[in-house]
Structure formats: structure tokens, C-alpha cells
Image (tube, rainbow, N blue to C red; front, side):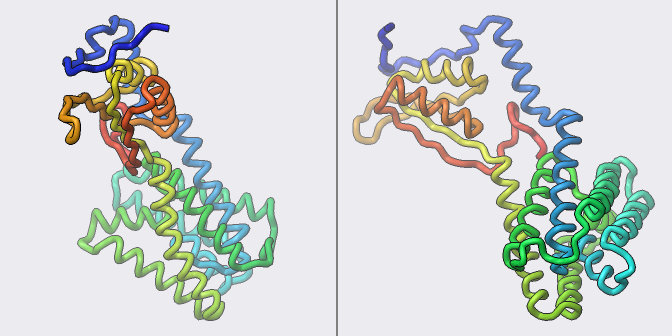
Length: 318
């Protein structure tokens, strides 16, 4: 086994000086691909997966329990109670098509295109699940369990959709119109609408259901944020070890990432050290930790989580 030379204070030369033209070209291609994010097919797949999860929750967990958390689905649940001749999906079609029409009138067509598709697709998926799963009462018999899934599934679906830069349509189109045409604070306006829907549910279904709706509305907001942060989470790694050049080479050539190299001094020893900073995915951070520990068991490694990274090698817009 080749004996490694520990760092003794000499400056590190950049890895790019040792790269061949082919290695440099491949590194640039990988970086550009990572920055570009999802292609058309994965984008379409993620969008539909998010909509399917949301539609399934509406049909299986929200509608049988009269859980109106807000949005077009909440309005549809309330209206289906007032007009029991029609299913929830019928009102979702009416509401979403009306919002899409307003979007095309008041907004640029390109801006509203994906939201229009999401609105129509969500209505279609709700209709499909109503046909496939014709249920009238809770599938679990436990309201608390139903509320959990009525929150978790749409929150996960929304997180998947928001992460690719799209939306689930519906009231998002209304938000875009308000942003473009008025000075109304959008967050407060939409929250007021959601509260009005929850109050209507409390009047129609009783205080118990109304309180569950309030809890679900608040919980969904937090769960969506947590889910988005989890999807976007990256690891910021800082390494101080005896063999920084080997670690730098591993980061660049094996992981296909880059790093920032800094110098520092140990407060106790007074010795000059090299500090490597890099941002990786969770899997890459684990690989780096295992590699560094294998070559230098005494290495000092700090790994922290970041909810979002913007820049070359990572998606610039999420």
C-alpha cells in the first residue's frame, strides 16, 4: 500500500491543474445537468404523482369525513353537502375550470399553462378515484387516522409539485391574479378564504369536524414546509485532516463535486491546517465521511444540513 504524505503546511494545487481535457469536459457536463434540474419526462411524472396523491386523499380521506381544509377541494366538499345530487369531483371541475378561464383572461397564457393543466388533471384524477373507489364512509373508522392521511398525502403531493417549480392549480391561479392585478396581501387573502371554508364546515358538520378541519389546515402548512425542506436538503461538509489533497481529489474525481479550500490555524496547536468545504447530497456526504475516516481516523469532520442550495451544480430555481 502506497504511503501517504501528511499535510505539512504547503499550499494545495487545484485539482483542475491535473485534469485531462476529457475529465474537465465530463465534469462540466455533470455540473450543467445537475443545475438544469428535471427533464421534461421526470417533470411531467413528478407533477402527476403529486396530483395523484392529492386526489387520492380527497376521495378516500377528505370527502367521507367532510374534511374541508380550504382550497377548491374544501369548497367542493362543502358544496357536495349542500347539493348532494352531485359528487365532489363535479364541483371541482366547475371551480377549477372557472379559475382556469379567469387565469387565461387576466394572466399571460404561458404563466397559467401548467397551473391550468394541474387544475384539470386534479379534477380528472378525483373523478377517476371516485369511480374506482366508490366509498361513502371512513375506510378506517378512525377520524384521527383519516385526518393524518388527509394532511400527509396532499402535503407530500404539494411538496413534490412545488419542488419542480409547478403548482397544483386551483387557488394558486387566484393567487397569481391577485398578485398581478391588486395590492391585496395574497397570503392573508387566501388564508381568509380557507378560514371561511373551515367555518362553513363547522356550521354544516358540527364543531368536532370544524375543529379537526382547523387542525388539518394548520398542520398541512407545517407538513408541506417540512416535506419541501426534506426533498431539497443538502449536506454542507467541512473537513480538516492530514491528507487534504486526497480528500480534495476524492470530492472532485469520485463524487464529481467541487470544494472551497481555505487555510486556518489550530487554536491549541498553532499549526497551519487546510479546511475543505463542500456541499453534497446525503448519499455523497456519507461516501465522503466513510472515505475520510478510512484514510485518517483522527480527521475532524463537520456535517450540517441545509434546506436549500442555489448555484452551479445544484438547481438554481426550485
